[in-house]
Image 1 (tube, rainbow, N blue to C red):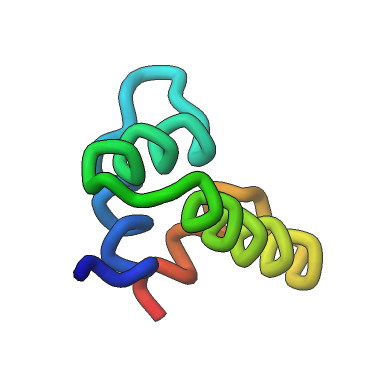
Image 2: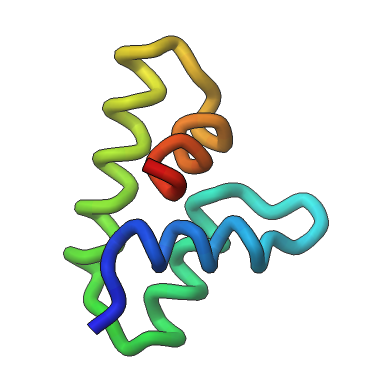
Length: 67
């Protein structure tokens, strides 16, 4: 099974022009047959880190993907 960090890394690598982290992650989560709860868990982590460290969601996602 693909880990959350791997899904996030794949989503960041699959960003389309004008995409948000949410949209790219949603696409990857569906591609892997994962659940909406998986998507929510990952995005909660991204949002929490972004708020705590005063980062954009993109910066937080990159940080989590490479942690």
